Length: 273
Image 1 (spheres, rainbow, N blue to C red):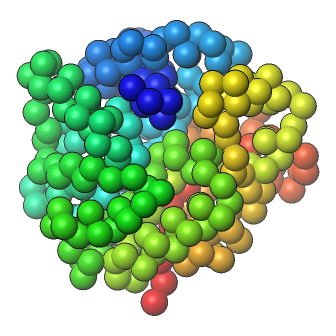
Image 2 (cartoon, rainbow, N blue to C red):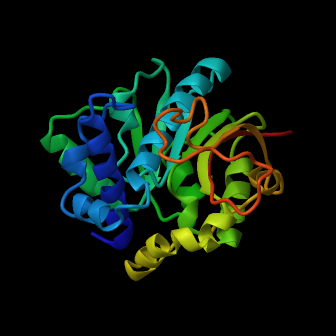
Image 3 (cartoon, helix red, strand yellow):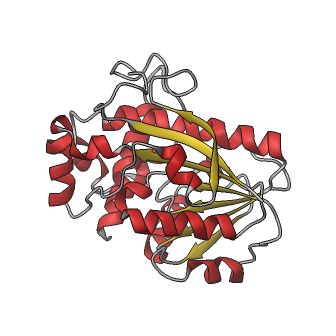
């Protein structure tokens, strides 16, 4: 499997460990099987960077945001971008008329499907795999799979934009904003530009570069960045705040006005007319 697939195994390993905690923020019974062969090895390699804590908090935030937005907006068309070994389609409860499109590398989708089939796991919502590279013409592949551009859509991009350049992130946001009607939603996570240059994060970031999966994009002004690419932020939280792992995040939450602090962002946004 390629490097990005190993990244997917790493996040699956973190979800497996969280599932096995007595006070786990969620349950993913398939994560341990999906983390093989290198997920736990990589998690150990990145130990000390609060990686497992962040993935746990992020997963729960996105679970809750997805569930809330499905209930509040009535959106029933969901697109998950580069979801890796995520299995929300199998572990969350879904509206009866929902449909999920999963856009990812074909080899990764094939591997995940084979592993889930071996476990006898079935999705709880109709799920359409879209084998496409986000660096290519993935909207055409999505349309060919049955995606309806006239329907308001809920987009999920988890653990993705770190690995892209600023130009690529902006282009992706604009493509997604233009692919469905105004009022469509996006759930996404980002890191701060400060985190990418802060001395305390350099050992972790150096290890990612050595492994061929560098983090390239961060912004200290997520609201402004998204607004420049077609989105208005509706909800933004830092890990450790209420609704985003309060009581579980191992670091204090620093007020936004304090400069020079590494941060992660968990947010949902809406397109405008």
